[in-house]
Image (cartoon, rainbow, N blue to C red):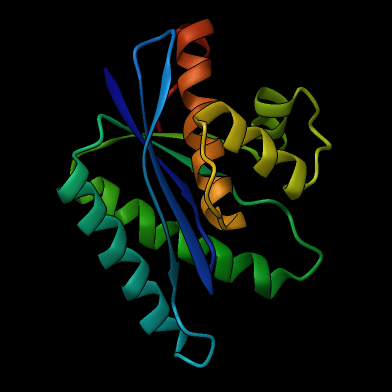
Length: 165
């Protein structure tokens, strides 16, 4: 079994989700959302993301980590802050010597739902169905699980097409 941590980085909410796959089956393990506090300083938010990702890596020992790449925003300041949140998560992964893989939001949607233009609600429904989750699933956690599933499906179908960052 390969354990995969999916990360949907965000400055206010970061989604984390863990699955296991053996190539033919994908099993849900865990998910959470990290709320960094809207009123907190940006540096405190980044430290919170780093510590939360480090904690989940130490606790669940994922074999691989899949992270959503930064989408290009109209607002440059927002894109920079999102990139910094992603960097805080990636630093925790690097310190733990993890293999990290990157997927664009469009690629994740395409692999999970068959359409790169799916909205978040459609993606959430597909994730819940794939993982047989019946309880409430927050959008950010759903996005993190979707990134992990995307990676699991990609390594199963075309392992030569992926490269770590």
